Length: 412
Ligand SMILES: Nc1ncnc2c1ncn2[C@@H]1O[C@H](COP(=O)(O)OP(=O)(O)OP(=O)(O)O)[C@@H](O)[C@H]1O
Ligand SMILES: [Mg+2]
Image 1 (cartoon, rainbow, N blue to C red):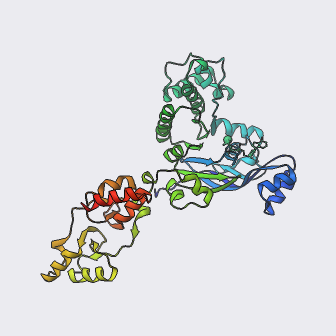
Image 2 (cartoon, helix red, strand yellow):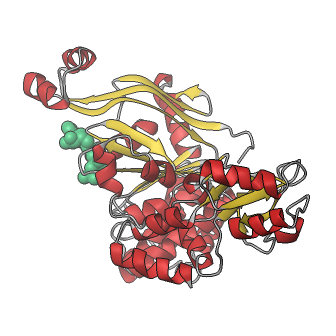
Image 3 (tube, protein in one colour):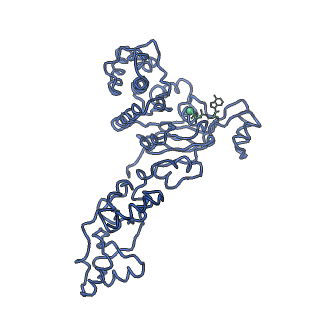
């Protein structure tokens, strides 16, 4: 966050038409015809419909969407396994749609590697030779390629299996050979098309963890297609959701959940456990009414409570640093005692959270405290307030029984 990020992949007005009458299809598309109409009129399928986006270096970018929505087509446009009909694809600032075949091959071999769902392994070659296959295509010497392949196999935890044949490995292990092959090329960008979909859940989790670790260590840019929303959320820095060749929305899981661009997107993310995604930052009330420690004595605090109808207010100093909360009954007492500041009645021993903390992580705080939760930045400046009610409602998705249970806990 805050650091300058380099654009690794940039896609501009990308259109891909399958079929013979591409020109006619493009014309109809520009006139606003739907994918269905264009298919009926020209026999052409719109694979990608005017995609525009950027992917940053080191980003984990996930593509989701129903079957046939264009995910694989989009991915394959990035290395021109599918030839874009119009538009541009920049890799490191260079438009690869304009490259000749030789330069394109170079890009595919050095900058981008693809990992497929069906592994794509050579059945009669050893694991080592499979992992070295990309390098062999590149024309690397045996020694060099085998040492690089060995390194990649070590990375994915297949040390010791070099001389086995793919058929002697489990599905998960075969998938790792596929991944090792891609890694051996040492590409800057990894393209992964449902690479983990065929794995059973336990192995899938293991592979996901391994990939995240890899990503962390090697800072690859990863573009990853999946049908699995949990997987998308776990892995993706951002998620793109596609429909009928159109990218309907791109954002973090939280962006998409809190602000879905369409009913399609909404339906897509409906089943997600929001608790683990929605953060204090999106739940908080910004610019809450505050009691200013030096300026507002108990009288001032009381006036603010009266005018807002809020019985518990946060107290900040002149630098907006959060000091604690004051409660109305104690403010009244303090005013009666004619105290000049609210010092004697501030509840200072209250938990604060940063913007990134999730609803799930805040929930345990409910039974501990009698006040809202203060959201603060690194310098303990007050950013906003999460009220108990909003927290409870978000946590329970309006499930009444759960709301009552949590309310009781909160009132104890
Ligand atoms: N070679 C092809 N020729 C003609 N049409 C194609 C071809 N490949 C894909 N399509 C069409 O392009 C659209 C997008 O297909 P694509 O394979 O990209 O979908 P997808 O989102 O990857 O689906 P899935 O989740 O099933 O893999 C579909 O309507 C499909 O029928
Ligand atoms: Mg696909």
